Image (tube, rainbow over the protein chains, first blue to last red):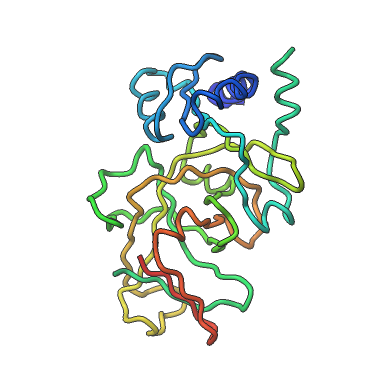
Length: 97
Length: 159
């Protein structure tokens, strides 16, 4: 697993544990995360990525959208196995321990 | 207005698209779509009006050299939700320099021009569908143009 992937997974666990609180204050924004901490909120994913690239020379960061709504892939969501998924419940549980 | 066209099989529409890393894409000329000079890697896409966003296979990510930037929640069966690696990329279309309806030589050889969407797409990763397609072209891209599916077995997408 690359350092970037590890960062993404770690940040996602933290993000999901904070999501209920964030939905109340930053719904629809894009959160820039680094080392399990939120560095800021931006209007678009592209803005958050641009800022991350500018702030962190090692490019070790991730971006998560503040939403509790899953993206609907229509037929694909229901009929085809989705690759390498991680269940939210599993991630949340790991994040709480 | 650039236009891509082809034939559909009565149940599915496939077309070729280019995928370009948003981090390395050249500065895009302002406008709805911008022509690009260098041909990007081309992949087979399934046009899916039921998909909210465009998704790519791991093979596309590795061929283009995309780096994941986060994870995107995907609605599954029932109330399940799964997280998938997400990428920021541009989608490009291969537009034949021929008149609409004019047959395109089999095996390539037709002059083409590549048009890239100016706004980056935030799409996720799905498992490969075997040999069927590598890109699930969702409404985030389809809604930027006009898709026409004809009863005579053809389709066109203009943008």
